[in-house]
Amino acid sequence: MSRQESHLVLSDGTVFEGYAAGYIPESGFTTGEFVFNTALSGYQEVITDPSYAGQIISFTYPHIGNYGVTPLDDEALTPWCRGIIVRDLSELPSNWRSTQSLEAFLIANKIPALVGIDTRRLTRHLRAHGALPGAFGHAALDVITREAKNATGTDGTDYVSAVSTKEAYTKGSGDLHVVAFDYGIKTTMVNQLSQRFKVTVVPSKTTAAQVRELSPDGVFLSNGPGDPAALIDEVAVLKELLGTLPIFGICLGHQLLSTALGGTTHKLPFGHHGSNHPVQDLATSRIEITAQNHSYAVTPGSLSRGVVSHVNLNDGVIEGVASKEDRCFSVQYHPEAGPGPHDARYLFDRFESLLRTGVLENN
Image 1 (cartoon, rainbow, N blue to C red):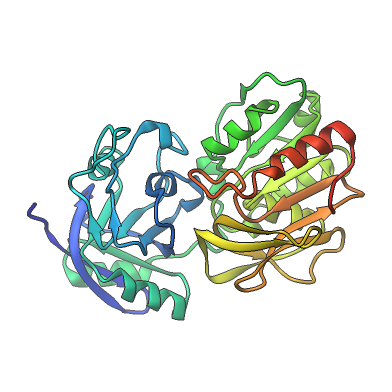
Image 2: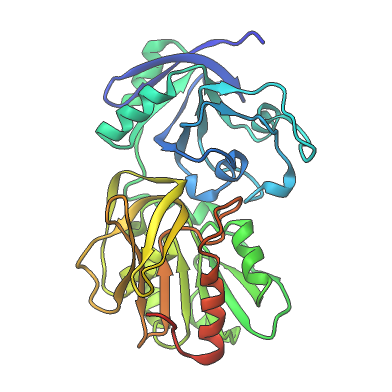
C-alpha cells in the first residue's frame, strides 16, 4: 500500500519520520499528548477506552492489527483518543471474530495513525522526558513543528464532560441497586457491575440529591480521562455522599474518591499504560498483575481519612485506598480488565459483600 510521508514532532522539537495511515484529516495534522502503552494485545479496547481522550497512543508492541477488530470488543460507542502510533500496522487481519481491519476501523471512526516510525525510540524519549504534547501528520514539516509547539497536554482540562453519557440508563436486574457515575465508563466495567447488580449509569454532573432520589444501595465511580484536579464539582458531590452510602471507585474514580478523603493528586512523568503492572494488596500481601491506564496518581501522605490499601511494585505509586468508617474503597488499576489480566476481579465481589454486610473486608 502506498502511503504519504508524514512527520511526528514533539513539543521539545524532537522529530520522527513515518507514513500516514487510518483517517487522513483535511488539516494535515493531529495534536495531542503522546503516551505509550505496553500491552501486547487488546489494541481495540485501548483505542476505545474513553480515558485516552486528548491523548495520542503509541503502542510499544511492534505489530498492531493482527487479529482485526470486532464490535464485541468496543469499550465505548466511539473512540476518544486523538490518534495512534504503531511500528507495523497489519493489513491482513486473521481471526474468526474479526469483522474488519484495524485501519478500516480507524477510518470509519476518524482516528489518524502514523506507521513505520521507530516506536522504541519514541518510548525511550517519553520515558526520559515524560509525556509530551505534540503533533503528527502529512502536512509540511514546518506546519507540524508549529502545531507541536502550540499543542497542550491534559493538565487542568476537564475531558469528562465530553465523554460522559448525556442521559441516565439502566442495565442488569440484581436485587441490589448501584448508581454508577460515568466519568468515561468502559463497557466491560458496566458488564461486570450488571452481572451482580441493577446498575443505573448517570452523567458525571449528577448531584448528590439526584443520586439519593434513585435510592441506591451503593455508588460506583468509573474511570475517565484528564486531570482529576479539574473536576471540582464532581469532588464536591462525593464529599456529600461520603459516609452515607458504600462507594467503590476505579481509576479516575479512585482519584476523585481520594480527593474527597482529603487527598491530592499529581501527574506522573509518563503514567501507567499497559496490562502488566504488579500491584500488592497490603492487607493480604497478595500480588496481582493488573491493567492500568492513568497519567495522574494520588500523592503519598496526602489523605486525611482512610488508608493506602494497594501499591505499585514497580514504582511505589498508590494503587488503592480504603476507609472502613466511610464504607468506601477504590483502586487505581482496572479490575474489569478487558481483555485481561483478571487477577483483580475479586474487587467487584468485595463491593457486593460491602453492600450486603455493610462491612469492608480485608481493609
